[in-house]
Length: 127
Image (cartoon, rainbow, N blue to C red; front, top):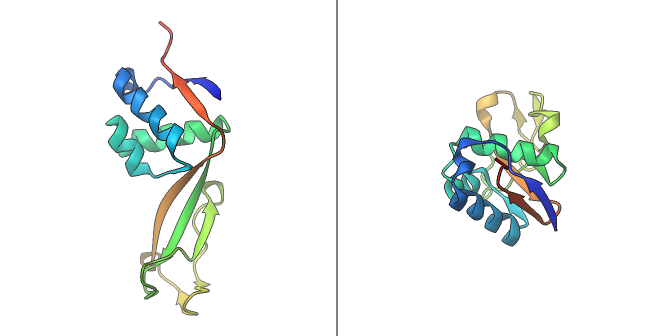
């Protein structure tokens, strides 16, 4: 297991928040932004920053899941997965699921997934 000093986010100064985050890292293979935000009581922006920090350290890999709003697949499934580094897809493009042309950014919905690559424990900041 890798040990990594926790970044200096105010919401992680509470030992229970750090413990909750470590529990998530230990029991899941992927994380959602909402899980991290809820477990740590960080804002969504802070949780996103924390996950990007972990990606920068090589602990997780982030992916953008792109959904076509007009695709009627039930339950909804992503039409593509992309690295955050590549950004959203260029419009227009053809949806491979429904063969319609996506011409408006409002026709897509984006969610984020964070895959844990290595078992990791975050340790509190040293004083």
